[in-house]
Each structure stands twice: as structure tokens, then as C-alpha cells.
Length: 272
Image (tube, rainbow, N blue to C red; front, side, top):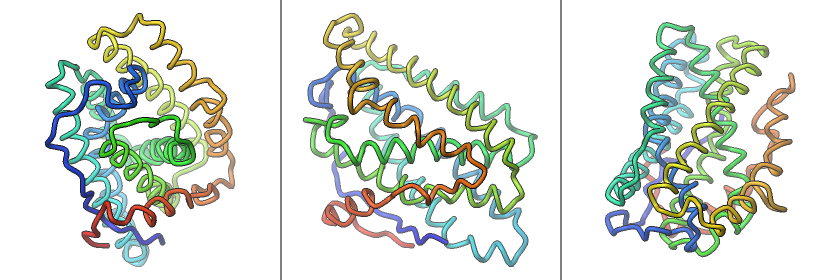
């Protein structure tokens, strides 16, 4: 099992956010803002799914997972809280969070389904966030010139997503979740994620008044499709999840470990 430390991030999220906090770049700011809008609802779903998965295990296995699940819940609860504060600033800037409502309705439709559907969806989403986190930690471009406290917020979040990348996956496997549904849920989750993040990003840009600026579209191309773009970088790690013998720990998580070690002054441990 993985030892997970719950951390308190030492940044001030009370001070207002610059409108284009990500290096003055309208697209990159709108894209990261869109991601943040999904986190409070999504992370509560992950917490609920993993907690229920732990309770469903027989007692000997439950003891094996207990400490890791408590760490996972602590980390995700901290992410949920800080991104709720971040999102409050976005609302004051006039941005409307449509993604959270869609996500909540989608989660409601899962009620009554086998618990493994909840865990499988959680594991698939955690895979997406982990491989995006790896990309963010490996490249400077996504947060180039970002307001320092917000760059710290996103890289800390990425490091912890990388750190707990296998918790939901291992619970899904322990509860006899099968390969066919693991693959199916990844495809469903990915489709919904891509549609939602693009819809929310476009909406953010429209409210910002920068949707039709040439610089916005140029940045979108470089961020998503360029030499260090998100989509080319994620293609193979995404496909790895479909392999029968895949495990999240097969991907290199050392970048997150290095960031946490090198920026230890930015956080304090709350517990394990």
C-alpha cells in the first residue's frame, strides 16, 4: 500500500486573482479555470466512492487499505476546499460554472448501480488526472509566467494526484472489477471529460471577451496540439490503461515526489 501524507498548502487564496493569472494568456487561464470548476463536485464523488469501496471489503483486506484510503480522502478533501476558494474568485469575475451542474447530474444517474461502477469511474478519472499531472510537472509551458501562488497551487495538486494515482484502481481490482468495464468506463469518462472541459473553457473565454481573439486560438493550438501539447503527450499513457496487465504504478511518479521534496517550505503535513 502507498503511504499518503495529507498536506496543508501555505498560500493565500483570500487575495483576489488576476483575471489572466496564467502568464497573461487568456486560453491557458480559461482552461485551468475550467478544470478547477469541476473539482469540488468531482472530488466529493471520488471520496464517497473510495470510502464506500473500503467499507465493502472483507475485514482482512480492509485493514490493508485503511491507512491509504484515509490519506486519499484527506488529500482530496483539501483539494476540494482550496479549489472551492479558487472558484469563488472566478464567480466574482463573472464566470459561470456550468460543468459542476452537469457533473452532479451525471453522478446522480450512477445511484443504484453496482459500487464497482462508481469505483471504476473514479479510477478512470484518477488516471486522466494523474497523466495530466505528470505532463504539468514535466513541462514549464502550461504554467509559464503564472502568478506564483497559483502556480504553486496547481503543481502541488498535480503532485498529490500523481501520488495517489492507484488508490481507486486497487480498490476496483480488490472488489473484482473486470477488465471490460475498466476499459468501457475509461472511454465514457474521457468522452465526458473532453466535452465538458472544452465547453467550460469556451464559456469562460466568451464571458472574458477573448473567445475570438487570434492570440487565444494560437495559444489553444500550442497548449493542446503543439510540440509539448497536452494531447500528443497523453495519447500513449491514456492507451496504457486499456492493457490487461496495466497498473498505475507502472507510470513514473518521481516528478511529483521531486516537486514535493523541493518545495517542502510551501506545505505542512497534517497527518498520514
